[in-house]
Amino acid sequence: MKTLFQKETINEILTRIEKLAPETQHSWGKMNVNQMLAHCTVGMKTASGELFLKSNAFLKLIGSLFKSQTTNEKPFGKGSPTHPGFIIGDTKGFEKEKQLLIDQINKFHSAGESKVTSNPHAFFGKLTPTQWGSLMYKHIDHHFRQFGV
Image 1 (cartoon, rainbow, N blue to C red):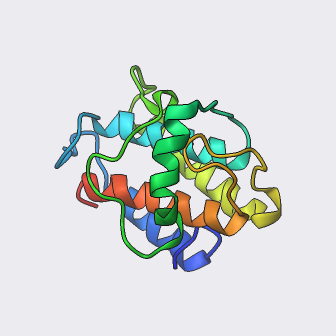
Image 2 (image 1 turned 30 degrees about the vertical axis):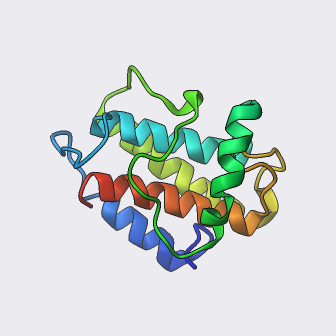
């Protein structure tokens, strides 16, 4: 299983991010490429503990149904539920959002498993560092596939 703690996985993600451009269009969903980059940065910030998104009973119920997806090889499907804290309106522009995501990915990888948040995930609840690393890869992979990279 791929995780953002593996150097080869980081290299793959960074190669794919370089294939994005301001005019890259999505194959599904509503976000533009800038919003997608900012959305993925929010995910990375929750994994590192820089950001904590609260949950509620409805989100926990949804998460309990999908938690096994954090630890399997199957990519996320289209139309997965989104926490309101991950919905992005305004962005800082393509190059800035791209660099912010690259920085967060590198920071997460460099810090290693011992620095992953102990906060529960808003959907999935308590996750191990390995689950966080896998989830972050799968989340970014999902959105990169959405944008064809």
